[in-house]
Length: 104
Image 1 (cartoon, one colour):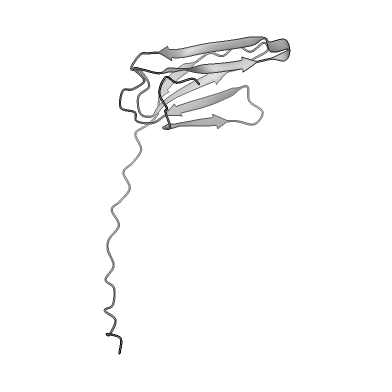
Image 2 (spheres, one colour):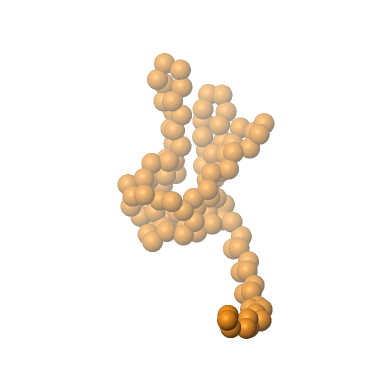
């Protein structure tokens, strides 16, 4: 993944015994309007295979999962699948704390 700006809000998932991996995007200020996203593999002899999912388009929305399939030879195919909205965590209930007696 290459970026025109630094994007720290993403997750990459690799799987054992599978020819694919996922990139899941988090919230950004511009949804990728100033970034490029994709995958690249440099093989033996410097041969390079790459694919681009988006290029300066605001499509990298919060929770978007892009799956890249890699087969011989490296042929990534992005598939965009919106991820379910995460459930909000319950607000913790404050517990009363005992008041300690003053120190002598």
